[in-house]
Amino acid sequence: MAAKMFGWKAMAVVPVHLYGHPADMHAIMSSARQHGLRVIEDCAQAHGASFGNKKVGTFGDLAAFSFYPTKNLGALGDGGAIATNDPALAAQVRVLREYGWKERYVSAVPGVNSRLDEMQAAILRARLPHLDDDNERRRVIAAQYDALLADSGLTLPQPASIGTHVYHQYVIRANRRDGLRAALKEQGVGTLIHYPVPVHEQPAYAGRLPDAGPLTHTEQAAREVLSLPMYPQLSDADVRAVAAALNCCAANADKTSAEAHGLQSVGVGRQRADSR
Image 1 (cartoon, rainbow, N blue to C red):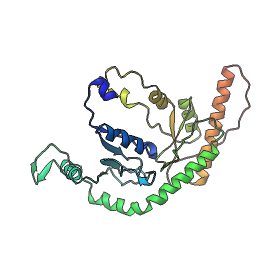
Image 2 (cartoon, rainbow, N blue to C red):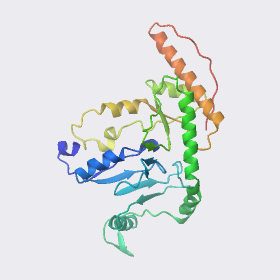
Image 3 (cartoon, one colour):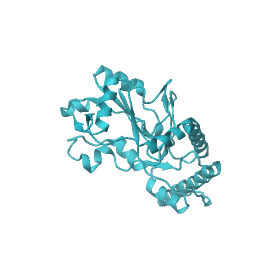
């Protein structure tokens, strides 16, 4: 639709399996094939996630994975991989990743130097057998957050029933996100915002989407999302401490808001929470 609106020639669709939650690949593939578009899956945060009975990265023409150290499957430095079942695309990617060479020292096309070094490959090979267990631990942590924060008044993740979430991030939404984040920091709980500036508002893309107009839901999400501590080594005690601090801070925020509007509310005690 956007391509038609702006006179673009659409070439591909890039579904992003954001935070480790699989996109609706059945709908995306159906629409893409109907319009003759390639599909490039962004699996950077979704190693091991599935949609239906298939792993993400196996639906589209290409799939891109990141091995940045904080990913579900991470190396000790930057790295990544591209997966495809198309031999022609695989050959093209191999050419592009190494200077555009088809023969040594001769660049047939513009390319880059983007080879995964042996050290990173060895680390990834050692970590790969632990991926499923690590992802399961992430789901256990997410289930604990779900239960402990059920009465917090915050918007919690709602995974699709047909998919398997791997919780690269556990992302909540809060109307007064920045104040809540500051209060959590005072209690020793670190959080991050993934992501504060939507793509269409990034300075690098200014003028490239003429008259795109506001993207109301996207912009609201950028104002509200907040990522809680999430990694397989997070202990149950730490999860409880984070949730206790969050419940406390959220209740205090509600109390402050109520008092600002001349309403009465019940106070909640403060509880210290530490998180790495």
